Image (cartoon, rainbow, N blue to C red; front, side):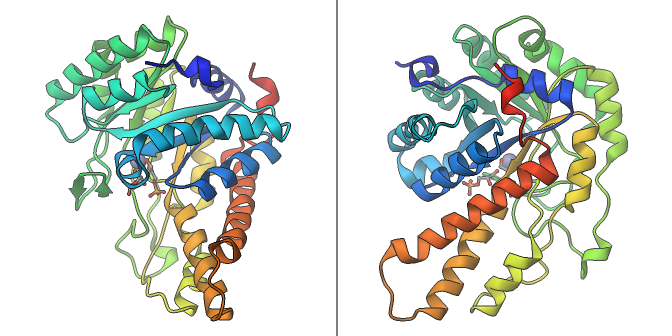
Length: 337
Ligand code: G3H
Ligand code: 13P
Ligand code: ZN
């Protein structure tokens, strides 16, 4: 058993306090491999942004859970070596059981999500409560979820949006202990809500960008009013940048009608008090676009460093830009101590 504190990681408490006070969102960037981690450390280090490194169950299965934990630790050491003074949290994304959350807490994660959004309400409350109780003793933050996002949410597929019901949020955060965790502990409770975002590259069934609907800011506002000063999380918040979709398609790919959440809407969400924004798909698109382009232009190259190097560099640029113009997290690390 190892605590995140021994690894140089921090939990999300101070990041969220600062995010709520200063109206920005902390980025939750997903990793599956070394290059993604390096890009996140350099991108967030250079833009002086706090960061939550996210590991999904899929990532654990792909890269080996122990390896990923050491990668997280390696990220902290790399940041130190490069002179970046930024808070780094290691977070389980979409944990689907108490045992998985416990195993991550015991192996050095500083934050876990229990995603019981697809479960019956009482069952979601029961398991989230168990996770909160275990995490609290160890100063580990917990993210719960209410409302199902359309698209693919780990093992859950939903054709339609099931928006968060604002009438349930107070009951949920109170009975699970998430509220108490936020108001009276050394770690953080937070809540992911569904307001029209979804996972993956196909977020809307529309023909063109102009037809993308607005997020349900009315629900967000209502939830904010009911929860007060409490961290709210948005999943499925990639913008599916046209530049990279086009680059993929121009180099042998076939992504059609791929649309994401417009950046202005995410920016607006940060002004409504969203404290964490999850981004995975945009990073995947950047890497795929750059690798496809590089290999199309250099058919005789075969060293992974040749094509992964430029992909990593572009990912760094994307992260810096997002932190600055979308999340508002750039430059905020110095206010968090
Ligand atoms: O929320 C889901 C993340 O994008 C992780 O996706 O399960 O394919 O690793 P994954
Ligand atoms: P995207 O698929 O929009 O990047 O969402 C990622 C996410 O929510 C990870 O939990
Ligand atoms: Zn998610």
